[in-house]
Each structure stands twice: as C-alpha cells, then as structure tokens.
Image (tube, rainbow, N blue to C red):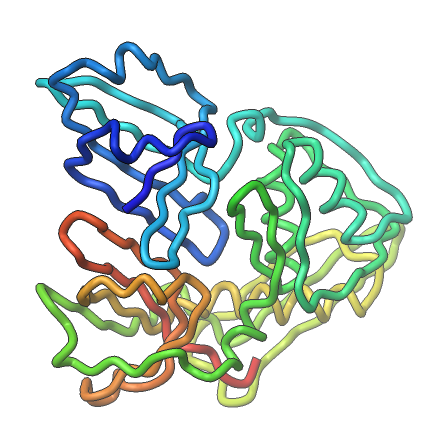
Length: 307
C-alpha cells in the first residue's frame, strides 16, 4: 500500500496500523480512515492541517484525493479521517437562476468549490427558473440530481454526475456465492417506506400541473405525494418517475464481507447466487476496502426493474 501526503510519497516514513477506504455510489462523501503508530512523534512535527490531501493506492486501486477532515492523537497513535469533499464546500448560499440548463448550474456550483464537472449519459434540461435557498453547493446539486434521476459522486477533485439506472443495465462484473461470504451477512426486503406510485403537483397562477406515475407491477404501498415547483407536465412526469425510483430502490438490500477485492467499486453490478429468493443482480452502493485486515465490506441493493 502506498500513501501520498500533499503529493509526496510518505509510505516509507510512516507505520500504518489500520487503513480503510469507503467508496460510495453518490449522495454522501467517500471517506478514508488511517491510523498510524506515532511513537516517534513524526505527525506532530509534520503538523497536518484540515484540507491537506491524502491518497492511498494499492493493486490498481486508488482512493483519489481525500481532504483531511479531522485528526486526533492518543496513546502513541495518530488517527486521520479524510473525505472526498473539499472543506470549502460547506458554505450555505442562496442563488436564483432563470432560463438556465442543468449542466450550466452543475458546472457553476462545482467550480465554486474547486471541483471539475464530469457527466455521463445525462440530459441537459432547460429550466425557466431554479432557486437555491440556504444550501451548500453540493446539497443543492445532489437534490437536483435526484429529481432528474441522476447520482452525484465526489471523487478525486471531480463532481461526477451519472445515471444509476444506466449502470444497473450493465453486465455484472462478478458472481458471488454464499460460500464467498466471510463473517456475518444479512439480506432483507422491506415494505416500510415503499410506494406504489408518485404524484407530483404544483399550483401557481391559478394553474394546477400534476402527474401521477405508477410502474408496471407496482409494489404494495401508499402514494408518494410531492408538492414541487414544476413549469410543465413534462417536468412533473420526470420528477414523479425519478422520485419513486429513489424512494423504492432500497426495497431489497444486503450486507456481506468477502476477501479484499480492490477491483470492485461502488456503482458496479454483481450477481449473487445460492441465497434463495434473494439471489439475483445487485448494485453496489457502498464498499469499504480494509487494506490492513484484507477484507472488503459491501452494501448492495437489488436492482429495480420496470422504472
């Protein structure tokens, strides 16, 4: 395992006790936790600061740039926790736009927090008006992405926007059976918080715009009712489909541990076999690689079909 600190390789200068990286498909920051033996008090001399950059790599895997978020010293040890989101991304702002496109908003907000925008397979929708009120740039970007059916992932100084639905359609990168699980594993399906349809409506200027989306073979559940500003029936239709998918996508989830597999990443699909009705195609929404104990911890959800 190699460790770079502010661009300098310090692998041979430190004694790493524990190191793990959590890779998420989006919505929340990736994170990295590293614990060092600091009997020689080197970290006190280096005097790390919040916002400094750490990067771990091993066997083709790289955490990308991670910004130091917190650190502590205790009993001859030094612990550093880093996140993929820059420190300056936490300022709340208010900003209105008129006659603006999706990518224009995303590019502006990303650049304001020193991130480069990358998009994959998205539509550049036009809005008559958009209001950002007392939110951080990344909070607002994430909300807009959810409405449009996209995911926002912050990684290696980039804001990446992509379609989870499109990734779900890719072939599984691996097949994993119950005999590959180590330690505990758990799969479950839930009914609470699952909806049969979504109704989006907005009343303004004596005009009611509404759209109700119901997928084929809908799950049992109430109607998800959302009052949300929309300019036309097209927006209402998009938002209703995307909000229902977002609300229902965690209906069937699983958690398990395998021997460390650095080739796996959040956003991959895998095929899980030998677990009865829970067998099938799953989307990795979180994976934690522990480089010290040689294990990978996965959180997965069964892909949604039909919407």
